[in-house]
Image 1 (cartoon, rainbow, N blue to C red):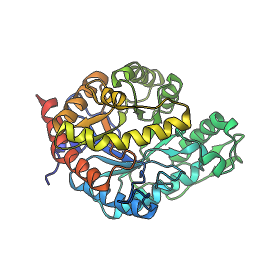
Image 2 (cartoon, rainbow, N blue to C red):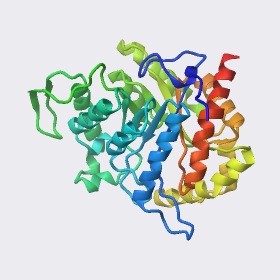
Image 3 (cartoon, one colour):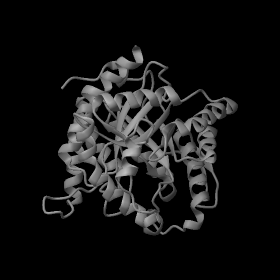
Image 4 (tube, helix red, strand yellow):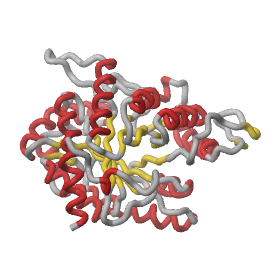
Amino acid sequence: MTDAPAAVRTAPGPTAPVGEERILLGLNTFGDVGENPDGSPQRHAEVLRQLLEQAELADAVGLHAFGVGEHHRKDYAVSAPEVFLAAAAARTSRIRLGSAVTVLSSDEPIRVFQRFATVDAISNGRAEVMLGRGSFVESFPLFGLDLADYEVLFEEKLELFDKVRAQKPVHWEGRTRPALAGLSVYPPLEHHLLPTWIGVGGTPESVLRCAQYGYPIIFAIIGGQPRAFKPLADLYREAMAKYGHPMQQIATHSPGHVAETDEQAREELFPHWLKLRNKLGAERGWGPAGRGEFDALCSTEGALYVGSPETVAQKIVRLKRNLGVDRFDLKYSNGPLPHAAMMRSIELMGTAVAPRVAELLAG
């Protein structure tokens, strides 16, 4: 294996824009639970051990970031991202390590900061946190929270987190927890403030909230056409200028799979994508999907990044040119896709897709 070019792998700062000729490439996963040969689900512990192998490989092939998402349901293995990231920090050396996302609404902002500050120390400054409300709501009843407070919980906890992140004595008052009057939070980060992203779906309100705090933004693009997010990316740029904040990175996250050929990538992913899509669809009242929907999403303008290294690289370059994004994160785990297929996808992202993207953007 060879490292991706430094132009793809590194950035001038944790969240600084990288310019028109570059894009940072990362990975993220929810720790999707796979299947054993007999069709039974894997043990969650086995999935977590395999995740460590995937993080190590992502580091070895020179990718920029590795993120794990927080969920509290049987089809995903990651419920405590920071614990996993601390283990990954000890087995990697360069890759940035973060959540994708941390469900701040149902967590304690002070503890979130403390846990990520600890990961930052263990990893020598490679931690980042992505905050969001999450697309699942299992954490609310699990932690005794009322879904009627969905909006106020996120707004107040984000406000408190922002004050804690500043690493100054915290003065805060709200309705979702007791007030704080000048207390300090430890441990502080050594050399910088904790890189903090806001993960958003597709609403202008979420974009404006992110810009108000001056945080970098990541759009979850899991359906439709990525180019449709250009007005939201432009709104973020305009709002950042309005609030007087220095420009931060804009990123997108989309599912996908890389294999040697387009046909192989589609055939490997389709049955697992279909199983996941229809399971979630049944929960959310969507109609059943089929091969037509999958192929449309894999097309040039679709939201799935599935294909050979050349196909995926061309699609990432198109994303860069359409939206002007600084970073793209591939959700490489999709339903019960086997570990071996995911490992090969990660390897190709670093050794073939990343160099090709750098070449195309430099040309």
